[in-house]
Image: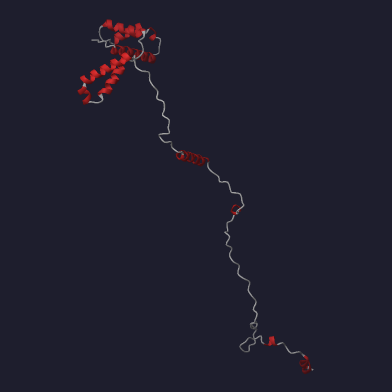
Length: 223
């Protein structure tokens, strides 16, 4: 019976018999035989040349992003632009500029002009050596002449109290002492006693200084 069954079984395929490999026998399971058409591997993925950080503003049709500026920088930019515009303006040539009209002063009276010319010629002959030694003498002489034509009034007019104190000192005939100043204060400043101590001292000091200034300016000599 067994022999009859083995005769009835079909023969195994040739591929299964060559499982052991190419180089001889071997009971282990080996590699499958090489075929003429190997399986093709998928192609490698190429790196993209597009930059990694791309924003919507990089597109050609995208709207430009508005730049944020500090107000101080905007003022400096405006100032620089103004200066550059002023430098870029074409300068006018001297010939194209219209001559300004000079302000003419009224002429001097004829008699006064002739008298000044006569005095100047006389002084030029008389003080020729002085002018040659120091060239600033002419300017200083002109300033002196100008100051003597209309002398300025110095200070204010003296008050009746100052004139009364000066008259008392003239009658005294000498420099007043502290006791004399007390008598002058009583006559010229009757309301002095009603003032506080500090204000009374300040009022007396200013009054004495005003009287002494008047005596010195009017060259009143006292023994």
